[in-house]
Image 1 (tube, rainbow, N blue to C red):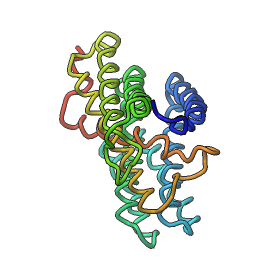
Image 2: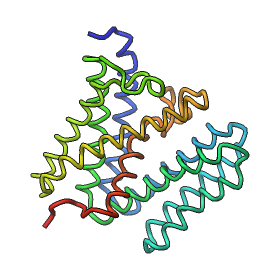
Image 3: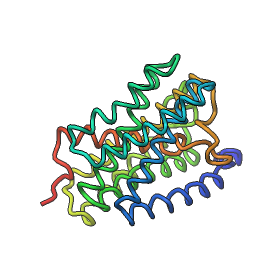
Length: 263
């Protein structure tokens, strides 16, 4: 079994996780403007965190771009799709102009943030609470299964140069857990069996979202994206997996029928 030190962060993860899940589920259940407000605020704060990591002295720019991103996501959810894209591009173009360096990192990861926020809003608006809960379930189960399998089983590292704590056992456990969430959706949401494979792919995208954020933090030499959550890091540290998963759903939805097998 892993040493006690491997479990030292469990209590913090549980407490912060319970609070965030409660807030998230509350917004999902209430829906409408409550859910839109949640993803708007989270998107804006994550862009703020991103700028603070990339250009620490750029406090004014971080605030301006965070507000711009939040407003862009909110507005994009209430206009036709063709108008949403230029709105979502606005904070990316603004950052490319305002920031003094790391433009590629800002535009790349900033695009993940605003597109993921837009994706979650559209998923909820188009397909309802059940499918939003599916996405949240896949991401949460991927993270939880990976955490416990990595510490109980251990083994070879998945990508040690970027994320030294991730193991292949934890990665595979996340896929299995996500497949189980997909299987539940066959009965709960009337989906076809394709949802199991889709859930596993979304799980992998969630893990890549985590890896992407780890790569940025490693490059910038920081441990956490911010200290917005006292003692537990920032919103990017907690929602990085959701970014990857929601972005994949948005992209895949342009090419395949979603939800699968509903009829």
